[in-house]
Image 1 (cartoon, helix red, strand yellow):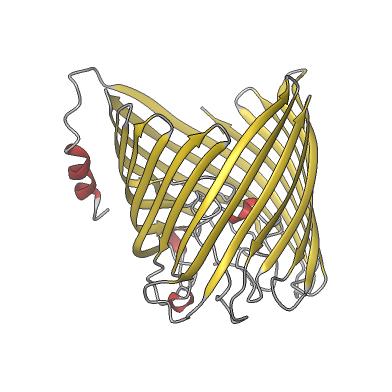
Image 2 (cartoon, rainbow, N blue to C red):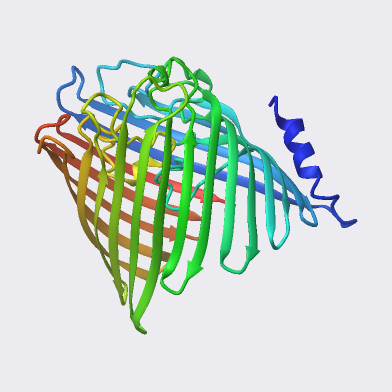
Length: 402
């Protein structure tokens, strides 16, 4: 990478590593996943994908200094699907194209109060609503960046990163609006403080999608906001959790649109003896009702939000209001399996302006761990009212890591 030596130089100012022995730690991960997608309104309304993804690498460390390099490869064993780049767009998309790539290539210096990281790296901030790794997709999302995490006082943390390239989920064949990498001067800044009520975070995300092929620069934005996340134990067996967040977004850099839109989140959960109940309301506001003038999160892990059917990865022109209610139960151990859980969530999607009911969605998941392997079955069903079309998705997945 063209900035690798610059990153190394920036880290070097932190001081040489102490004269200690180097330790080597291998990195190894594997994933096998079957995904079935069915979507009304297409010439071929079904897709089937069986993919395998492997990552391998090494971390070498001495004292506070470490270097990590990880490569990855994705192979489609059954490729009866449209991957966003190859195949027929007349069938449902499964966004896992075949790929071979350098996933991580970073240098890091760490002390008790400071962590500096330079090179290709994962960046996941808060709940990943605005900046994330998109770990659910096979190829993930990483950043060519320099990042500093400073904790000068107990409970106080400053996290600031500059990224000159976003390595997307589309891999080496990425082209056009779905490029392999998107250049730009991106700045991510968080300042958080832990209080008895919860962690309060002020954030600023300047997203520079400086590629004309990617929506003609219209995804460049500046977002400023506040977030509170905390929990409180009611009894030895019961605990509540809560999140509150507000942000304001407007156009940035070369974005030709002139807009401003608001974001709101209120989320409450209750855990009682293995049971978990959750409810929330999230708003990605609209501005003028024109395309890409609503609140956008192009660098977020959007699969985690607004339903697994992926109908709202790009916020509609009229914005979106998501009311969701969910619940589940978990077991610590059952025979050879650990961390078993069953969960379900229902979403009602409405517009932020013009009073439209977009649709409803059910998400269900069963998961368990068998030694080093995480097993899961997911299901999503989207019932359209005034936006997109009826869709169903099913995933069978096994993740192994060293």
